[in-house]
Structure formats: C-alpha cells, structure tokens
Image (cartoon, rainbow, N blue to C red; front, side):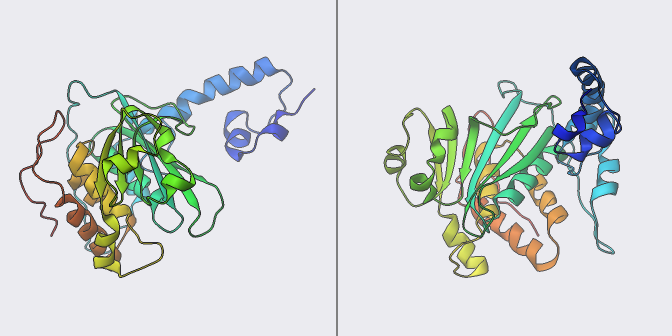
Length: 290
C-alpha cells in the first residue's frame, strides 16, 4: 500500500484531489485526478483573475468582486469582449525575459488580465532562477479563444518580450522564439545586430528604447522599470490585446502615483509606434489615458 501524498508537492492535490485519503493503486490515482481536472480547469476559482479557464462558469463580476480591492470612490472600466479575428491562432504563447526588479512577472500578469478583460481566456505564471534583484527572470502568458488546460512553461513562444538587451548575450532568449515569431526588445541595436544572436533568421523584430522612456518617469536606475513601456509598445504593435484593457489591468495591480506613472509609461511607448496597418491592428488616433 502506497501513500501517494508523499510524492505530491502541492497541497492542492492533498486537499482537493483525494481529500487526504490513502490511495492503494496507481489506477485509482488516475481516476481521482481525471475527475478533478475538469473542475480545476473550468469551475474552480484560481488565485489570479487571469486564469480564464474558470470563466466558463464564473462571470467577470464574480472574479472582480473576489480579487479586486478598489479604494473608496474608485471604479474600473471593463471593456466588452470582441469576436476573434480570422487568421489569428487559437492560442498565443508569450514569454517575458527580464531581470529581477524590472517587472517582467507583473507585466505578464497584467497582459493576462488585459486579455481576460477583452473576453479571452488567459493565464500567466513566473519562472524564477536565482531570486535576487538583477537575476534573469522569465514569465509566461497564454492567450486563447478557447479554455486553456496547459499549466506548464512555454518552450517555444509565438512572441517574446526582452526587457534587457544584455540578456541576448547572457541567456540567448531568442532561442525561445518560434520561427516567424515576433521578438520585442528594449534596445537601440539594429535588426541586423540582433539577428546575429539568433540561429533562426526567419523572425520578426520590434525594438523600442524603453530604458529612456523609463528614465523620464522614474529617473536613472541600474535596473530600470521598463515593463509598462514594453506592454504599451506590445499592445500598439500587435493588437493582441486592447490598450484600454492594459490600462484597466494597471488599475488592478497599482494604485495612486504608481498607477499614474505606469499608465504614462504605456502612453509614452504607445506613441512611439507610428500609424500602422497590419492584419491585426490599425492605429490612427493618439492614446488618451486621462
């Protein structure tokens, strides 16, 4: 007789899957876990509003009431969901590459929340190496038109955001990008210089000097906070989420002066993208956030 509780690292299994019972056979474990998975993926309230796999039976208002703490008199605008455009993949996987202190994890969470507010399914999760300021940090976001059952990390992403160009030499984040994928990088390097770091030359590149934009808001720092500028540029360039939803997501994670500066960072980056017309986005109006 084997007690499979000893091999489970997370109390979710202990308390939710088999309710602290001793499992005799592996087949019994498979049955219990199989019964538990639909509830976990579709009805259970998770610790992040971005886990939209719960949204099939949980409304936006229920998620907001549970997770958002608003100040007296504060309100939040929830944009109406839009129908997915033809030609957009069912699920988009995104990786944030940054350093501890740059806000890569928060950016991934806000992006997932923005997608949720746009009426899509989404989730985000971090991956830490050395948990210290300045150490390389990875965060993942998935966005889909259908419920997402994957819960692990992303090996090859459709898009990556690199918050520090020095990581190109340190950990080669371009290796985590799919062929024909999009890399958005905080750098002043040219496309040709960036492609020197990639073995796959069939990728798209978008660059922004987010460090300079960050210094306008926060002053100079050895580890500049460029996450909101990167999100603003990402939203304007790709149209994967609406910028209005990004701003609403900021209201969930920040308050006061932090929220004001975060929104201004989005606006500054958004305005660096010229009027563009692609299969996903047409932007012709300046962003008005106040």
